Image 1: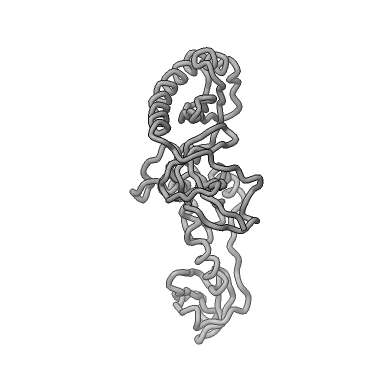
Image 2: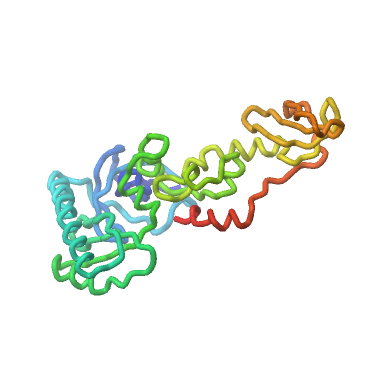
Length: 289
């Protein structure tokens, strides 16, 4: 077991563990710590606690100090510098005619490095841009290409549900989402209906997947051959949520399907959820980050 505090450097960002070095902190406190990027100011997202060693990546760095009033002033000054740096970098990108979109700029707390986040469809040769930026800012420059999901997390916005993006409000890390999840949840595989504003599969498909997986284990799938109180037949429609099946009976194939509860039928041979391979290839890009 190790005694740690959890520190977050971005709003709804990933939480990193640090050694509190014998000090007690409350959630919301600002602390100065050393990271792989340099000295940073972060917010305590997890107060002092013990956690198992297997949840920690060693060596565990110690916090430097609790943020002072002077530190907070510097953080606010850096936020203002970032706005000016964004304008300058955007202008330089236009001058170099680079096919990239600037998303965000971050100063490290000690001003030893400036990070420029951008999106692009492919690889971008930004060596001349880095030279120009280094000449202007006289410090280390790092350009980091990010995906469209990270762009949405940084910029924020409203989803098709009308609420702020999940990734901006409470999702610390992106969870894997697949086309199969949409299919298993009975959703139309229309890209407009299953993708978010970022153009990738909606993160919320993951929320109910565990429940759907459990329901699919207990519910005959479309195409299943089942035995009903009225005879044998094939399942032609399924409502996973209500547990109601529509079954076409063998003794009257031309008649309208009969409806039954899952508990009223016995599966003789289950069906399979099939996704057309051509359709899958068209939608594959929705799974990318």
